[in-house]
Length: 429
Image (cartoon, rainbow, N blue to C red; front, side, top):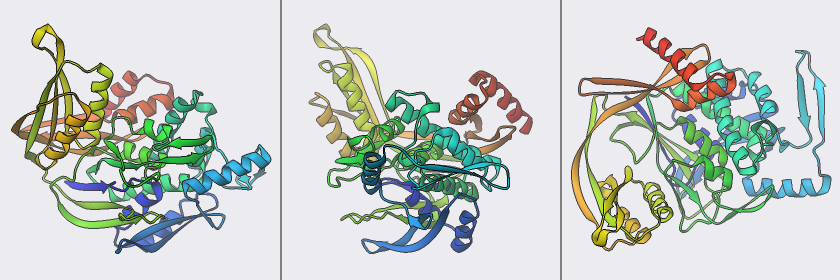
């Protein structure tokens, strides 16, 4: 099974992921040309060498009208100044020979709405499948922004993520993922960084609210030493969309490694590492540690927080079981499953974030069906299908994010879309 593992120990951003992915191709220069032929207005991709902590990799420079995109803090500072001085954007429209109206702005940090971005996507030189992927990533961003600001999705103004450079990052990653055509994509838990970040609305904690929403359900953690934003909203949305799983690197035969470098320098190498290789197609067996403790003096909110911290530290699974404790107190058994080499880290998290004074350990053999993702051709474009196999068993499941995205675009219910796609899936078997 062809597998792609994305290591996010220094967070994730669209340009870093783009550079890491393009580094996996033998014909990087050709892929750079292909990115420049996507048809993104005013955008040029420039791939260049970069070194971080002695490691040589690639940095993807995105030029908009000949100027390189700014890092998030510089962009926010410029945006704050621009808004203070002008209080509005100066936008000029012209009608090109193709009959479509295109917007040109004085600054490429214009705040697009979702329909503006849709117009750009529709005119890209890409297949409908890749365009669908790009739309779904922006839909994730729109939903997060909508929840943060309490506004309908149609009225959301994309700030940093709506600029042409962010559109370029998302389109590039979707295109390169399509070109790699791997069976399974696994991301590591994501380092979000720490401290605060300046944005259009003021100074906010890291991760910024929209990024935090996008990271719901994804193992992530705060850096103890780096006080900078390492995970951007674009990076979080791309990880959420493409990841089959978030875990440590699977057992795999490595074929190629790519390094996508960030702009800033830290004591730790600032890069995203993409590892391409092969995993077993049959099944996966390993040993796992189950750590359990009894708790009768914590609130549900406190237990929920402890659960989040365990997942963020890399737990495979965390769950609670209601139980009757001594003195007739209702309580829970909190159980955490993790890899053996992660045991000490989990124990520290358990003792730090719960009131327990003792933890039980069981070492279990775990038998896991092999998992991969296939693409199903449908009238709505490609839809991902998760497939689990091994031990004479084979199961398929449509990717929920893809189904829900189609339902939103068409106005149909999830049940209608699911029934429709299952019929297509059955016919293709």
